[in-house]
Image 1 (cartoon, rainbow, N blue to C red):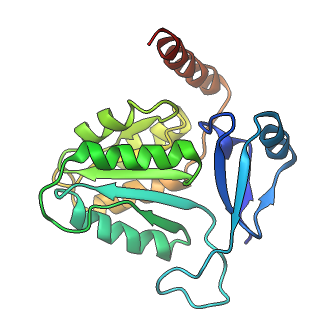
Image 2: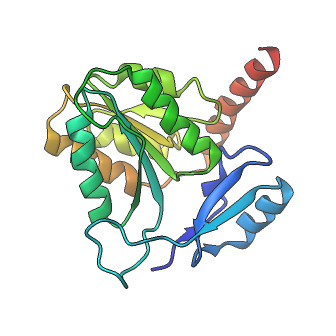
Length: 212
């Protein structure tokens, strides 16, 4: 199955921004119009097989940026394996060990990758998930959701079009975290009345950017 760039994938990409796609990506007509209208640069790369993925298999559909502080490091490493198994490309933005670090740095890294178009979705993990979600939501264009079960993961996607998932590694069991990740990645945005509400969130953000 070839990857597809849709209009929804361009949400949060600023005018004049850049989106990375693989050479076999199909671009929908609406997405192409939006790319031209907002002068978005499409950076085409040849996607190498992911670790453990034999040559000749399908190219991952989307890039997921992931990062964690020391409290979430172990779960991040597990998530990388799941993501590759499910066919996603992984952009690991740290940390690289269980040594103590500061969660805002890693939340910012994932949020930045999202708004630059280097990733389709983002995941940040710390001990509780609260701090990372707060930090990530300071980046314009990011809608980070702290989820603690499958219902909140589904709701964050269907109703809020969340593009970044925050998790607390010490608040939920590893298997529950895996289920949350799977549901969150697979659930589409419902649109309709929810689009109007997401647009209002964007409008609030835009007003404060102008006055800041």
